[in-house]
Image (cartoon, rainbow, N blue to C red):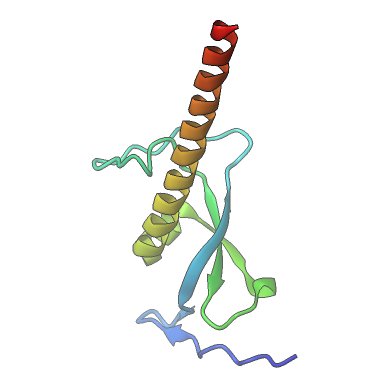
Length: 115
């Protein structure tokens, strides 16, 4: 199969090589979660996110085999907009699932009360 070469890394002022984060693929929380994050502007999307959460990121032009894991704190510093977008999308999905579960439970209660 054809594999395109990724763009060259960016060299920052400290001489460190950096790659462009395309998007976050997944996340994992530690088994024993550390205290939840507390920020001044705690949006619904960030409430309840463990401080030690890690994200699996895919860099621009790289295949899934080259995904890397990074701590949330570092990624918030480097690519805050990518982290916020991922958290907002996942909060929306979680909220929808919770809402659907509540509706299903409510319908089941109504059905059992009618009989």
